[in-house]
Length: 343
Image (cartoon, one colour):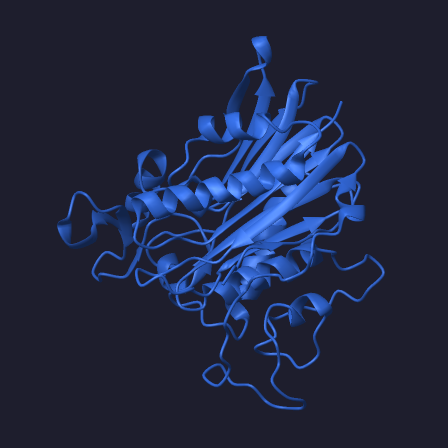
């Protein structure tokens, strides 16, 4: 079965009531977008967390080619559910967001983790816009929005004790770009060099338990250790006197238990002035970058710039799948937004 999905997301309009949205595991009334995530099996039924069988978080909407061009930006989004070691489809815990009705354009990726990670990433997707106070948008406003959003998430009915999500968004207004990041998702910029070659420029720092992030966690009172002391496993974040939560990142939304070890949802902001040679931007969950280098990705995309963005997105997804199959028994969720920019 092919679980490959292509979609564009239409945000809540400014004149609509900005009521807080929960993933529809908790709600009866649904928007068309939420219906495509979790289908209800009947009417007027009260679904408890243990009663609802959630099969996927993939937004199953066909790509609308009449709406994939915003000003001088063209975009395509892709998401693919992961596989376990038995080649069975897992719940897709990735979500993505495209906001087109502001004075700037926002493209976001949210990679959930833990038992209820798909609910956390969906919560961020459907509620972030409500905490953005103006259409202008700036780095300070996004820091406040992330903090308010995380507070509401922690107060919600979603069990976030050991579940959370990354959050990375790229904001573009004319020649100005800033990247707002929490966690280990990634954004890169493709810049044309001499001889029509392209340089990959990373737009964010990964929040892994190394370097300054390691020092911050230790200063807070958390621990940084390998799982069971195995040096070949990823370093993880633990509480001082408990082997919990064992997160492989130092910043995330949710993760109540991780907060006790120093996990925060405070974003880091990277700003850049775009030039005429900055041709494309890619935002993706770590499943995309796990077995593909930024340089190889940049080279692949550049073959299709500027006229074949849909093919570029398709080929990138196929190459990511191929590398997972060659290297690993399973596969992580893969989600990305590819943006072509025209001067």
